[in-house]
Length: 511
Ligand code: MN
Image (cartoon, rainbow, N blue to C red; front, side, top):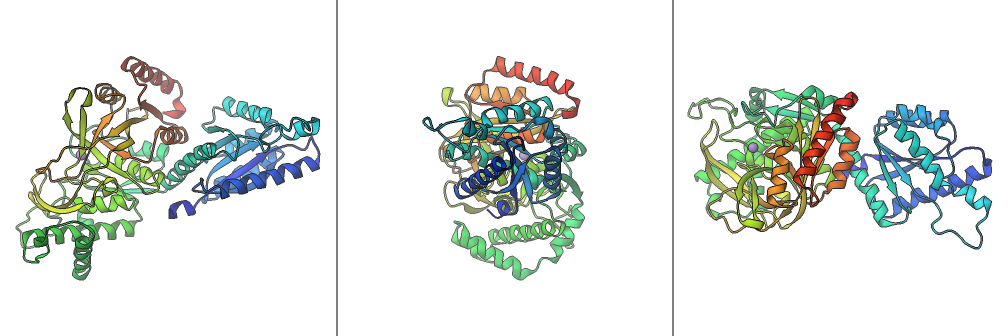
């Protein structure tokens, strides 16, 4: 994916000059071969760039400073080929502000039993070199991922690939702008939070954009562009033939949806925003019957659906935390099979109890099982009560993972739940897209743990992600992570939350 081509991961090999220049030459050659192997494996989404051996404190510090200053560098992989006394890493690691992966591997795979001698052992020393490095990271309380295994093993490389995707999502969120068209939905607690802390801790910036400014863009959209987009909708999506009759109410609603999409596209591009929120109570001039009416005829649902599929972060009702998180989910998922969703309706059915995930309109078509249908229906929520266009579909069965970030006052908590999507029965009268899932380990425990952790009704779901991604994300961000999976029990989960409370109270730097 294009975004992965904009970044690179640096590889630094730890060594020292104790064994003489010849050893370092070999270390260097081995490292180059390994990095080349990684890049040719076809497993890693981001190019690894070999930055040479680090043999002294100064060399380490110079490399870390350079990594910090290079906007292309999304993270650093370190590996100790020989023994690399770790005091020489202290200053450099203190400087490093990019994600760190410590790769515990070895150039050589199996021991050459007949030929092994002291020279061989002195060259292949990662077994203890990486422990020395690990110690200093632990002593410095550095957040990092440790990956263990041979560098040619696909399963090992896949762990690095996961971390790479997260590192790029992290880099991407450091200059992320989220625009809020309208405020939070009044009185809602769980989607609100500390935007200053979010910028300090998670990187992204959240701005309010007056709807009057948005409407200036609305006025400037050209009719011919709207017409082009309407025709594109008809080509892309299933729809009733009558919808194409320009005099019909349905056509008018599709026209308004296309107009809204072009408005949002224009302002997001102009402001350089990677995500946005909407609010159904703030859509422009209040009176839709006023001849001077300028505004959206209803929330721009179809636009939100389509922009989400392209990677724009989206949160409904002013939910900027979900908008930012969705953008990161989309990046980590490499633009595949993810959506903003809301726990809408419960389905009690014994051991097969499930939760219907939907929204008023805004579900991303990337999770659709079938070709989405363009439909127009009345939506009576919010300041407008009007016919409005949307894409309708159901999601495919399969395992996935959903996540949210909540603000607990003294810290952010990431809550992650493994879920199993199942096929829903036909819902001929439900005019919105949906997914149906069973939270792990079962409906009662999954939903109960989510509620105990204070999780939102909004979450960011992906078929592509699993816990490992979120573990890497929480590690890089330095935020709490509460996991709900097949092994979760309520008593243990409650204890974890209690222990975390103490941990974050004691570690003020993480709050
Ligand atoms: Mn909602």
